[in-house]
Image (tube, rainbow, N blue to C red):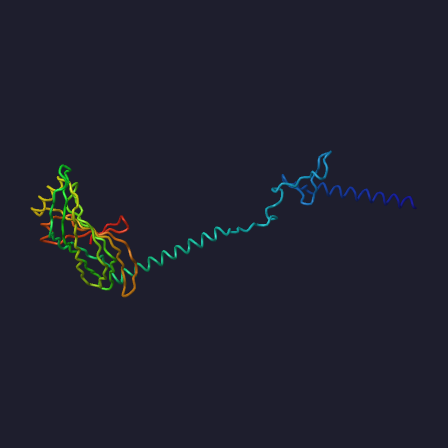
Length: 277
């Protein structure tokens, strides 16, 4: 009886093994994709290499989702530059708006300057040393400058005016000296006449220039030039907004022309901006 039981048990195990083998043959085998590696598996080390020389698996073997995303951080320099640019842009915008409102409300206009007259009271030449070809000029003249403020709400304030006068043109131009005139204030719509006395004594002039100036003086074709340097301030009420240095150039015309009409002057500021008043 026992032999029969053992025989039955052995037959059952053999039939069970055969059934499991048949099932495994029927199931499809899943193939691993190329480059696939187990995350927790240890890399195979070649023979003769120690565990200390094990290398880390390359990054492409680990999915990108396992790496934390790096947040972009702005440096302090970038933040500072952005703040400066924004501040400068706001300042320029406010400046443009302020200037626009100022021009729309006040409508500022340039001062009008004219050389109204030039009178010569004394114009004599005396001989110098014999044979040196030079003479001495003694002259007295008076120039009248006409200043007018065409603005209805703005005033102009002029500092001390340095005035220089010359006669003749080209190589024959001769200085009659310079003088200083006190500053003054022009209220809106006001007109001011500045009298500039000029005097020169015993100034050396060469003989060709003496002959040319004498002839032009008799025919009233003597060319007169007046240059004035001063500082002009623009103000509203009692407040002065801005002050700028200017050079006023008048003349370049003959005495005969000045007897009949006034001459326009040119205002030059910042050494390169020329404005016709």
